[in-house]
Length: 106
Image (cartoon, rainbow, N blue to C red; front, side, top):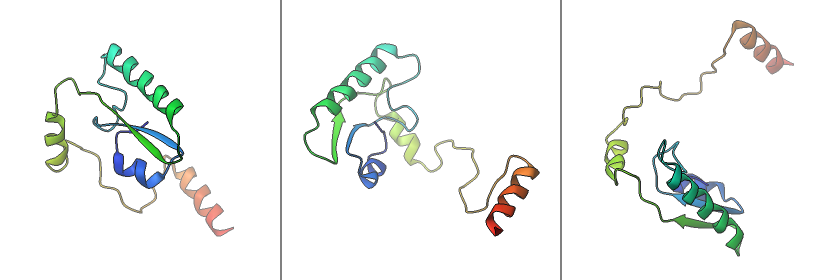
């Protein structure tokens, strides 16, 4: 299951279910247990009913606040405070860096 249709399509999974919700909330909004159960059940049903490889089922569900989340997501960073992605390696500790560099040269 996923909430990024372009990534699901690019990954070409054997079967998939798409939910048009914000990233990180594929099965529903926090604390919306009934909706979460409905989406998970719909996902399992979609997986069972898939007849051909690569098929992506679209689960019809509505985000609790409507589509207003799409405007926030499209307005630039959407409140994302993380550093932009790049190819610079990051390590939790100096020992991790040393180990990675030693393995890269061996």
